[in-house]
Length: 141
Image 1 (cartoon, rainbow, N blue to C red):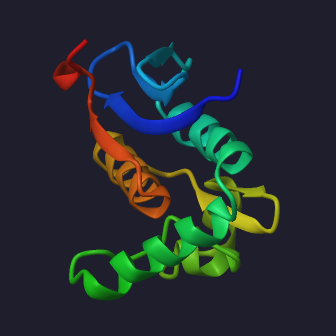
Image 2 (image 1 turned 180 degrees about the vertical axis):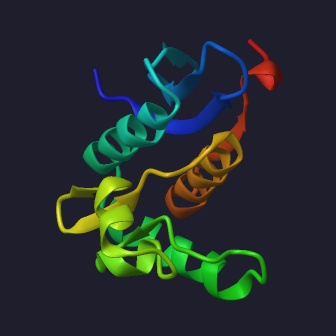
């Protein structure tokens, strides 16, 4: 069965982080898959992998969206995804950057993030893919 992703919904605060992926499974039916990662950062890691599998050129689109937000925001001091590892934490040393980033395909993803940054990561992923972003508490079945 071919499913297309329509939206992602989050709950990152509290002890049990989770996310929901809303997919279209037929002309009149949607499916809500619930995922409960062990740690909050796993939300970002899992979604990057899932969206990369489902959306054409996802990483390229996500990097472009992140770059746009970084360049237009006066309070952002770093990028979330980049082809250059150093641009993830430009004011930190090499050891810090190595400790708090990982490589996925030809991109580097920053992992030193809290709940509010995770929300922003996912919001930017959704914007890049042109899918809906929301919170689990707002899902209407």
